Length: 236
Image 1 (cartoon, rainbow, N blue to C red):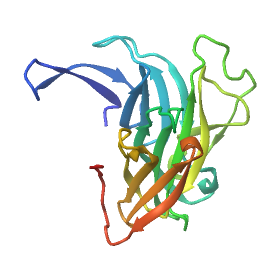
Image 2: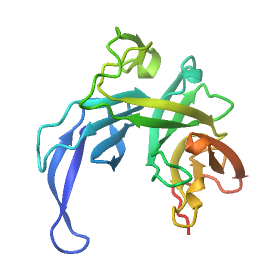
Image 3: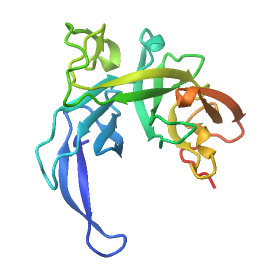
Image 4: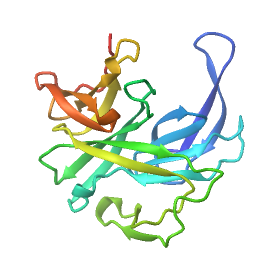
């Protein structure tokens, strides 16, 4: 609840860490999960259902850098629902011959009271890093304030972009799962990264998807509704 990302440092003893510093996050975002790729920090913020990117500041407490990109993860199809949304998991795929472009996979959670009968989504993004170049667009920006529980969040609409880089949405896959809290990709070494597994925290069980179109879309290949309320997965 502090809207901070704590930086930890190993003391030299295995398993022992101390807080070395922090990276501040805008108040009210609620950072939940993060990943680092090409020295860029990617964060999903639970309370605003946003995905952000920024340069990693110098340790231990360097000045927090302006955001490179910021996007709402809520599917457009569900914006009309009387519902509260919370983003959950974040995965960045490793580039391979089969999947040459690193892609970002984010799970959404609809907390109701209205629900989409298709379940919650996995959103897939490609990050376009335009730092050092012209902004993505200098067109005027319009912002739509969404009512209900996410009224504090504003979503950029239209062609404008207030940030120097961009998250380009590839797809929103409706999974038939309710409240996806965890996902995992298979191992690159044995080709298992073709598959993504996700689990519902409430209804829908566990679903396995095949990554298609270079990883930009997901196709359901298996579902088990006997296994309920699973929140973490390990590929063996």
